[in-house]
Image (cartoon, rainbow, N blue to C red; front, side, top):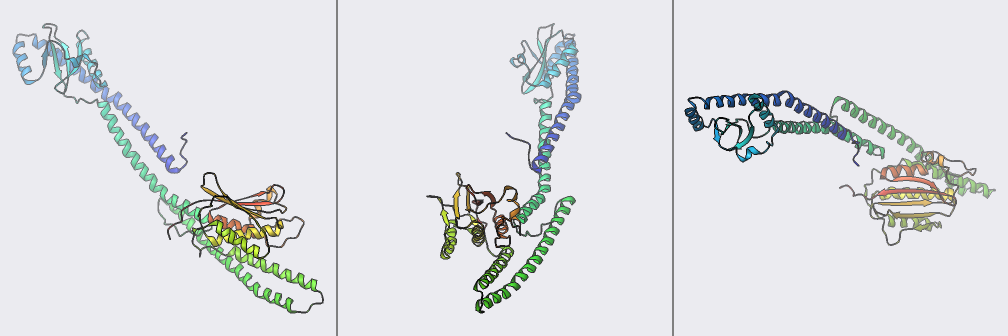
Length: 437
């Protein structure tokens, strides 16, 4: 079922089209009522007077000479029987009105019909004195004036619709550009300044968007430099502290081990800060074999003695979606590290494709405490940590990093609790062609 257009272009075009159509219909109705029908009726009455005059002239003493002269010059036609075309009802409404005027003028006592002769419309009536039919050719065109008016109004309607459509298109084009830039910006990219075109209202909106993007980009750069500087400056003293703890002689090995673990946790937090602030601008999207990438990433965990269960689709490939392999590797690493921190050792990586083959998906499932339904959106924000009664190391950036990369890659992210306990983080994407470099 076709509904009301959702785009402004469709709505304006529909509104303009309906208004113009109503105006044209009203114009056609007024022309018919106040111009065409009165003119046709008056023409019929004038023809009726001419036929009445012919009847009088042909019945006078000079009738024979007038008859010969009129026939010679084609002013009238005479026949014993009306032509076959005169026995049919006129196909044009205009001539119905003309005939009505003729009949009214002749008083309705004589038959009046319309026919065609030599490509012309002819009005015929009976001469009662001779029993002949006399016809007067009409100078009017063979096309119904009402049809001509309808054709002319239809052409005007098409021209007006075309002009309105072009106007709406050029009005909407900067808006479409703005919508595209906003979508680009929402995925974590910084769009180039948009050209300021269109009406003044659209120009103001475009200028405001360009200014907003510029200010937010400057703030993001300043914040990134500030946090990156802090994280970088912390790495050196943390490394020195770790080396000092390993080299010093301690009377309490357990205390030393705990201190080294705290230093390692701090280094992990600094690494997460750097990971969160790192962008993907330097990496270009390209066809990515997710199966190979997943296996390579999991092999690194196996080298560290961490066993992660893999469940890939049999006899099916995830295809070659257009992604940034480095970003997806960071995303998967953060998911697996988050699962290890919160879910113990029972971790599963699954992947598959939709039934129609248009989408691919992969998910990481653990056996941790899970996340309450009311908190599943909040944990995607930076520095949010849920308290389950057990102190867990980390900065609260793991899922925020995953969300940021997923948004930049055009992936949808969904959290839900695993059956039997635990959390599942699922990402879905659609296959698309990589842009030309």
